Amino acid sequence: MKKASLFLTAILLTTSLAGCTKAAKTNDNLPSKDNTPKAITISAAASLKEALSEIQPIFEKEKNIKLTFNLGASGTLQKQIEEGAPSDLFISAGKKQMDELESKNLIEKSSRVDLLKNQLVLVVSKEQKDSIKSVQDLNKKDIKISIGEVETVPAGQYAKDSLTYLKLWDLVKDKLVYAKDVKQVLTYVERGEVAAGFVYKSDATNLKDSVIAEVVDEKSHKSIVYPAALISASKEKDSAKAFLDFLKEDKAKAIFIKYGFEI
Image (tube, rainbow, N blue to C red; front, side, top):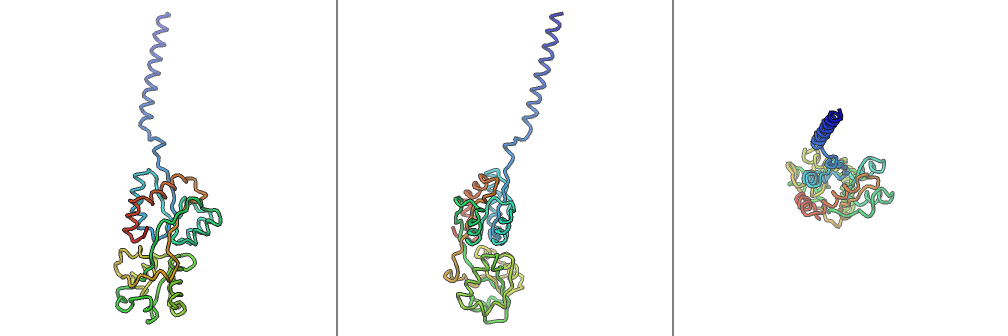
């Protein structure tokens, strides 16, 4: 009887161990929680679209961090962040917007860095390329000119500053068609809906139906700098910092230069 009892115990123990082994093997096939990619949201100036789109798959593969981009006018993005919209990193096309967020303690001041530089250019439709060769020519004809909304689009403010410096603002302001961002300005020119527009050099790298008439003299406007900083409310600061650091590496710099930015 005692031998039978011992035999039964041995069978139960073997069965139990087999079950544990099977469960362990089953669990081995489950995806590891540690391999689940982090996800961060980047609020970035619209002019960065092409460069960031090319950088994205390289970074995601290397760092296992998923990126979501919220692209738009820097002033609009600033307001979204102020109103609590989810964002982990902000890259602005102007210092003014970043300064506003810093004054309200909405960015991590120690993380702020001037990431890129750009140039302002005048682009004109193909139909107007022979008659508009410089900013000074904008007052010679009854034409429409597009710039970004001055209050929210840094390129719009730079354009206004340049036109004011050249004593043309009062002469052309009634010809202006305002756009929500520089991409829309370029679309207006490319479609021939306006004769000319002010965009960044980086936006004019792949023109199809327009040409660069002139690179605007930098003396006529503030230096075009793209500051970047972590958002104070971010819950993924480590991942956001990893992306910001990546943007300073040579592989990212090469892509920015390819699209007309300066480091």
